Length: 138
Image (cartoon, rainbow, N blue to C red; front, side):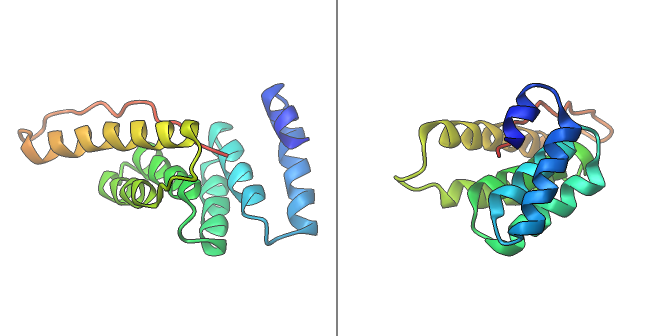
């Protein structure tokens, strides 16, 4: 239901629905990860990372959560190395059971981040680097 609200641009209804779900089942990683994604895309960055961290505590190897953490650190904190580390962990966690869309998104995010890190390491002092768009997963 929350995703239907979210896809219909009803972010507050989606947030409320997910908060209710978490109140009933705090141990479901998807609820925290999805709520974190909605918060981030709604400009509520502190709430977003709080939910991403809650998801991470439930499963430190969840590749969707690692992807979102990597995106958060790259986009909202400019901690590019921390973001890169999370995306490396997401890549390492891809298995033959991972669906193609998830693989594609994580690999694209990783490759974008790797280009940024390479530019930083090979770049000149005071050179500006544009951070590309990254995709969050829920």
